[in-house]
Length: 277
Image 1 (tube, rainbow, N blue to C red):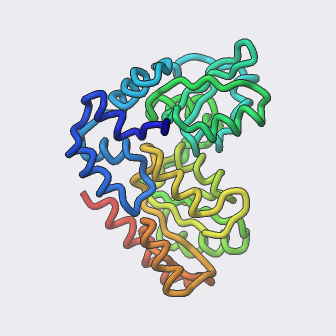
Image 2 (image 1 turned 30 degrees about the horizontal axis):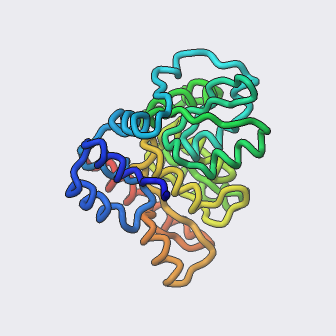
C-alpha cells in the first residue's frame, strides 16, 4: 500500500479540509516548499498540528523541548551539521544499536536508509517541529559561529567556491557599506544562513559538495531561512538558464563575470524590496 502524503494525513485527522488542501497544492506548484510549510504560510495549521498528526497516524514518538538538554559529542558527531540543517534532523540518543532521530519529516525513508547504511545503526524516527530542531542545531552545532559583530547594517551572505570571484563580489558590495559574511559552498552557506539570518544571500550556482540550487531548496524548506531573498550568480548566461533560475524562485539572476555596478544595484534592489514593511 502506498504511503499517505502529508496533506492526506492532515485531512484524515480533520486538521484541514479537502478545500484547504486543494488551495495549498495550487500554491505549492513551482515551489520547493513542503506542503506543511505552505499550509503554515496560509495560517491554516501550526507546526505543532503537523507533528501531532504524524505522531497519531504512524505512532512516532513526539519529542519536545529537547534543545535545552546537553548532548555528548559522540551523539552529535553521528550527524554532520550540514546534513542536520539540510534535512531538519537532530540526533537524540543511541540505545541498543539504534539511533533515535528527531525529524521534521519522519516519513523520509530514503534519508533514514542512507543514514542507517552510513552509520551501521538502525534509525528510529521521532517527530519534532522544525523550530525545535532548528533551536537544537543552533545551540549544539552552530554556537562557534561569530554573531557578536552583527550591527544594524544590512547583512549579505556570499556563497562561492571560487576565491577570486568571492573576493571580487565582496569588494563590489563593500561600497554599499554592508556587513558581509562568506561561505565556500552550499553546505557551509546553510549553516551560516541559519545562524546569522542575513538580509540577502548571493550565491554561485555551480559549486562542489552542494551547489547553489541544492542550497536554495534546503533554505526554502527551512522556516528559519525560507524568506531570505537569494540572488543567483552563474556563468551559464542563456535566456533559458536565467528563466529556469527565476522560475525556481531566485529573487534575481546575475551573469558571470560580475559587473560591480550591476551587482551593487541588484543587491540594493533586493534589500529594499525585501525589507519594505
